[in-house]
Image (cartoon, rainbow, N blue to C red):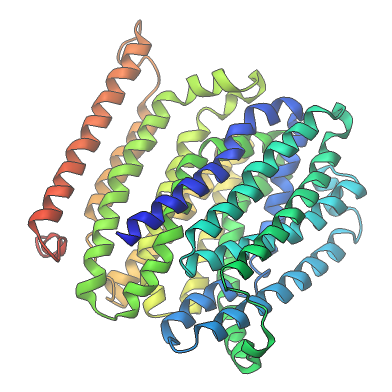
Length: 489
């Protein structure tokens, strides 16, 4: 009951906050030129390469030390927060020095000194707020999370949009970066007030442990190379397109990611409650408790995500033509691929439990470095011919490899996560074929709208049938609803 209530609060608050990028994108694509809109994607992708250093690995260490250390949670929270804050300031300082050393970033992203400066100072409150939201999640404080999230993402975005409407076209990018710093700074003050109000003040000197900080830092840093490599995988699509084609083509990738963010948002909503709960389930060290829950989650995600990807393929051209300027019509084939990337990335949230149970920074790093190589190879081979679509295909190949790596480790190498992945393989294959083959009018050439409606009804019927079977299986199987699914393999 508590799990369901929390996920509802987290999902609603985060849904509204993260949907703002999608909601305001029709306005942003008209207020900013394609080059300016692409600049946003290039700067965020460049920062993402070093963003994993910003917390000093505390976002990983905190989860694992909560499992190991159950006696003094305040010490763990305070130590992790102080280390994360100092690491953020040091990381941003070093990145700023590198950014202003020469003109490489300004020429690459097509920004001025002033625009780059405002962008960098705006990163500070944005990053710290993300850490405080992380605290609210793991301390099971959904209401403070919701209030802070809505203020920093919803209200702030409306204010920024108003500023852009009132600003002459040539100055809008500068005003955008300046407004981000101001609005996020105010949101940061609110988040600190929420922490104190919730008796979660994470800067108490008496609760800080230098020895624990060193231990957590050593452990967290060991995962950073792998995490940074994954960040490079996620950002490489925009970085390669920016290098090979420029900011205008990056705008297509950036908008496709915004439209595909529906799937990516669900992944994040799911992880908001999934990650803390997964840590607690695994802490029991009892497979009879956590394996049925993970199998149920795996089947549920497959039943929702793969059909949703097919629906996006059916309606994406109509949606893009309705919402955006004609310059952005080339993103139509990108959107279902972006959603499929989000699907496989979400399934990895289940498969990565093998690493949480038996941490291996070396394996973690090897998986991500191989995925990065796959992304780069596919991108360089396809971007010159397919443009932005080639970069997205590279990201898809990397996500498939990552998911396969976790499955291989959990099921065959360490044998600590014996889940049935056959439904994922079946659903994924069908979805991939559908995206490749389907084009509007392929069935009813003269009645394209009715064709879309018919396919939509068929997909929704399939979801309902699978949902009913899963619910019935859950009820009939009692306490351990998914055990026999694995045994019937």
